[in-house]
Image (cartoon, rainbow over all chains, first blue to last red; front, top):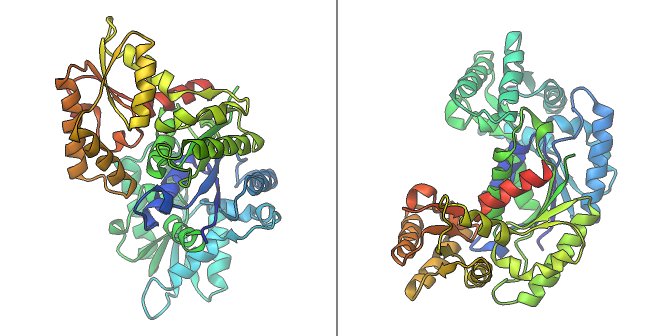
Length: 224
Length: 224
């Protein structure tokens, strides 16, 4: 039985629309009626997840409640960083597909028979903290960006947020992924939903696990 | 003051996602917070607008009510055909941006100083009926597809709905637009939100007025 999916979005808006397109692309459909019904709250005014965590948690909780009251049955949020504030969402009592857990599991099976020992993560500081915990709980080590590369990464994310997905931020993102591989990463997680707007699997020499793609697959599996 | 936009979508799903991307592309933004908050109900199970009009009107009314209760302040629906069932939406008492009216006005000003006398329309039978009335009220004549071209058009729309936006339906759509121009159209309205997924302005020898683009512009104007 198909379920109505509720999407807590807008962090950022372009990443949310790309996520919605992925869910559709992953749904086997011969016509409109085969697709999943999605109610998406694309709210670009959610307080900054890195700087105003408590306020963000409260707003995300309100969004989840309104989505529940509008009839959604399952919740998902295509923003890795905001998962640090997911407690507010979980309080509403609907199943919540956790992007960090799903992506971690996908990364562990991305290298074939043997799970990777070192997993590179392209994420904001908040997203890195979540993946550090999640990977460590599975016995993996996280490989992070270091030094000025951290600033460069955030510059790329802000470029996407102001509409720039051109060659300059793309080249930077490929270089950052390569830096993680040089530091030992056997898999790279695109752990921020803006990353896949700049980087695809061809741009990385090890398997790339795209958190937005993984979450979209999970949504189709649960709601389709 | 920015307003929350409610989108009645899913007719079809790909057209709705393309519409959301257009609203974002048309919004002047340096970061997330500059974007419009949108709550979109992407409901691919709205009953067929051509065959079950009353059932569709009831469902659209329910969707509009839930969007209102979720906090939206303005409503828009990126599906031309479904505007025949807009009465259910209007009953909820929120401003509703009418895609047919907006697109008709855009078509009248698309040929510079002199308004066109004949306007070609690429639309479903239901959409054609709406544009016929709307254009006639402005003293314009509608140029429609005739004979087997009508079936070909619906075939292209269904191709998009099953995920095919390849060269075959694109070539057909260019040919259909050319048929309207050959029949005297001075402007062509892409009067079905699937059309722009197959046809752009370069594919038509007269100005092309894209109803999805026009509605997105109106949403940014009203809600931004």
